[in-house]
Image 1 (cartoon, rainbow, N blue to C red):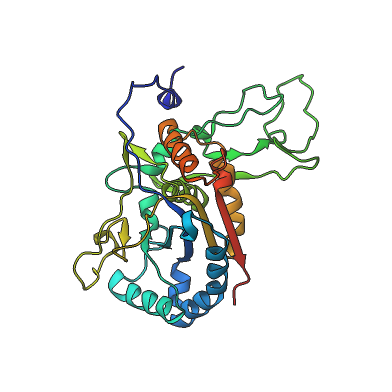
Image 2: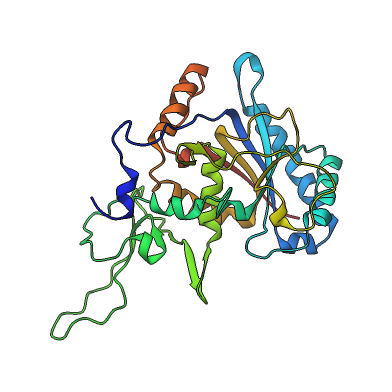
Length: 321
């Protein structure tokens, strides 16, 4: 086996030891903040936290743990990648004040750019190299892999639009087909990045897939977990997002950031993105030692964890005000 994918499979003991991570029972995401949300003013945040609070309570009530005391951590993601806006010094006091007003605690704050690169590690690129596309029945292997094209599907695409060779019969139309369809297909084709003016920009669904892997404690670089939470440091908050750690622990005694399972409470506008996230997660070859560690510890705690990484992520989508 040659090429980037060859690095995915190694004999036991061939690579560095995979460090384990502390695991909560659930990582509960309580929102995303984008430039348009900030520009809408504190009222947008106020409405968001008021809308998600009942769902947060419902998720907490549904989680079981030893002696009825489940470990649940909360997290919030701020976009400093696609449309950098304002500064931590301006945004975070308002964000945290509105969360507190609604009775929502944010244990961990993450920058979206950290899903592309964190602690000097190009997480998005490394996740790309771990893609192992699901085999499509009847495929002739003529289409380049997603690592080259930047597009990842959950099945067989329809015929391409390339002209037929001279004297060759033009291919007839056929529909795309989902690989794991239940009678009827729901076909999804996900753009992983675009390259413009010599700069690669990772797509929102691909970064969100990295975000899920981070919350599930399945990302490693030479055996070490990435990213790892950093303390908030001295106040005031910095004037530039790049001066803020990729992942900041806001509550000192919070449950671990990484968890067996994830829940995300998001506005309905994120539903198409998260559907694409599942397509990506279904085709990532996660570090087998990290998977084994999670399986062993979850069995010891009596908490069933699905074998499929995509099935470890659950969602609540609410109607936004």
